[in-house]
Length: 72
Image 1 (tube, rainbow, N blue to C red):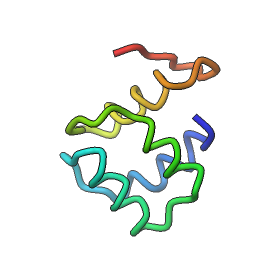
Image 2: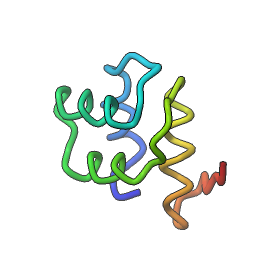
Image 3: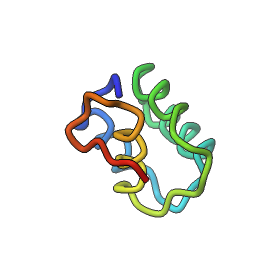
């Protein structure tokens, strides 16, 4: 995960879930997400996300340096 948790959280607070990966990316762009956030979101699985926690878990699963390091 290149973007910080705070950066991602600030973008996700404006997004109403549930949404698919592509819809999350579109909404993130619409709400001014940085290139780092968009790149991170492109690496999450292509599923429907119901809560922001679901998104964070999948972002963490893609980054071995992340403290969450959650493997779904």
